[in-house]
Image 1 (tube, helix red, strand yellow):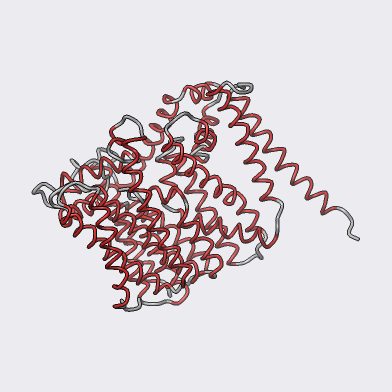
Image 2 (cartoon, rainbow, N blue to C red):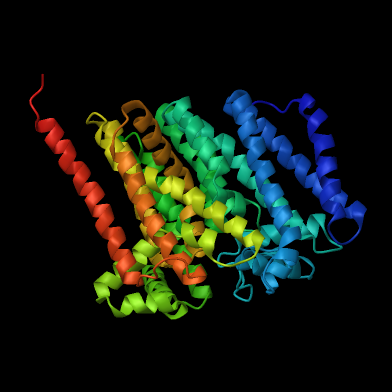
Length: 523
């Protein structure tokens, strides 16, 4: 990276002091200790961010993206911390200012560890059950112990998460520009920065902002090695994968699979890639062992490492289906009318569509939760049709390596989405945040599809949007009838049948129209 400039301090230090003072003022404990802790953390983070932005070479556009990424996440987390105790539910998470239960539990245990005399590596013990792998818990405890020894300042780790999330933006931008071009890189990075689910998790004490950034760093290292065989690429790959192993080794495995297939598609010679293959095999084995050890520490049996992981996944899926069926009378009604294979398909489809848009608007709740639900749902229902359209866009590419790479990226995106749907079912919180982990790859696929449509004006994207709009209107009417007695309250199976039938008519009708149009004599 380019060397840090002294001129950066002219805006970093005052900004860190101003933001630090504001955050310290709304947190418990000594104001001066809080100011020192927040200002120190913000100064380091802002200096790293400004250096990364200049290194990435995106100019003013990238600077605006990175500033927005940080500002949105820090603002969202702080505002929700203040508003949820007033306009949330009468539950422990809301009263403590947390959107996510996992964030609340992990943050409390991080403070307990930090304020105790136990060493930080105790975060990897089984008794600290809130963090399955221990890495984020240890980092949070270190932050509290070093910067907030006198009081539990929850916004301190939230600030760390927001800084970590924004630091991934320059790496993501440069990796995409290195592999493709600045137009695709800019479009994908805007989506990467502004996606509501990413903003929400980036303003919380969650793993996702760290995972997104470690993936972006690893992707930059991979892009630099793939395109230029630069030695420094090994450093970035190491940083990315070590971070993933500490926070979530399973994600390191998935990213390794993504890179390995990508290399195979590119036709990289085995001899030229011997070091990276050796490193990849070692990383694969380390991730398997670390993941199995973590799951076994959490009480999962299975014998061998692979057996432990398989047992955990099988039990998780069974539990998700059980919870989904038990938690909703409507789902019980649907399940009672479906055979087992269809039930499984329903769980996947239900998971892919989460968070549902109609109930975000229509389900009775507080204003704060309405805003959160609407933004999360709108964000996903903008990205989802672009991902659905991606196979049509890829089909227009000329046969060759580029087409095969995009096919793999689209397939990986959908495999991950479906895996999250299976793993977390219709859960409107776990499912979307699991899906978010590889959102960088999804943004590339979605942005490429969007740029392709703008150039070609392919009729398939409007058809997909029409099918989405039809399904949303049908379910909106169902929710209106259910909650407000407006219109006819059709049985849920009828509404689902109308959605499937309407989508089939639009898609098959479009295919028939295209075929008929192409079969007409020219001239």
